[in-house]
Length: 253
Length: 114
Image (cartoon, rainbow over all chains, first blue to last red; front, side, top):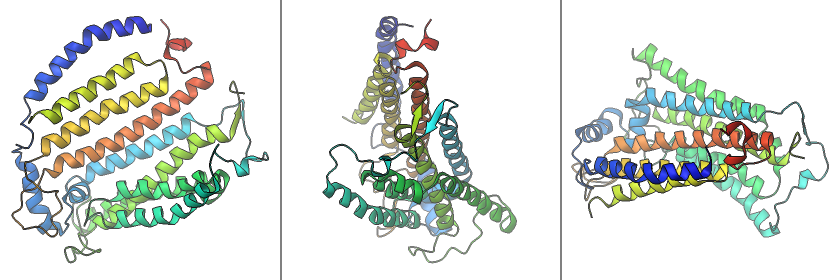
């Protein structure tokens, strides 16, 4: 379909879709006037039943724990998909051993930026770890903290040291990290099946509300998801960067 | 005024869709799709909002406080994960399309013509 036909079709279908959309949105409760009982019920039950203070995390790792398992495996499958799509083709070569790449610099990156980027690495890792571990207390958890954790090593890229990043986080290690995260979440669920009779049901002591080791198995789930997300994001990002920085050959040269 | 967030969501949805349809660069197509998806965040969070309510964190607030709906917030979290995975896979396909056809203009991809 040519661009002209596509635009013509949109000129007709677009306003129609917008009209349907507006009619549909008009049927929603007015902004700020929500009366759903499910959320209210959860907000009342979760703090006393699981000793968590962040209800979003409590939902994620308790009531919707099985959905989160699926969500985690979506991420797992997607990282595997990206790795598969961006694999080395027969006519492509890796230039990892070529000279010059070790000190790959981004155009215009000053020494100050490179130094500041390296200083960011420990800060980002610390913040990521904090967000992962405090998921049951404050906004955060495995998914959010995992992305921050993955951003830590990526700051090495900003410092212009991509091969150093590849040495610190080689592909096999990222794959192992990702697999470890996914497997431990599934195994924690198995613990629920054995000790509490229901898959992914809490089987650990609930602890004191508001402390780091509270809310039963939520901190464990959070760490498992955090590892999985860190691995999956770093794997995906480095796959793309490999394409740009390391892979040569095929039709591109 | 009380429907403003939904109106913004509808606008984001349509402007993103326009981006997908009118795009001459596949990366722009993928990014436009993320704009479409961001409309869903706004609808979900907008639906769960209650006037004067607090964030669903029950530390340091009176026990009878009004809270916004945490269920839709969890759905947004799932939504964000899905968006990240879909974007990554689509961009990987764009990289491969560029290798195969030497172009990222959808009109110039031989396999997509006709």
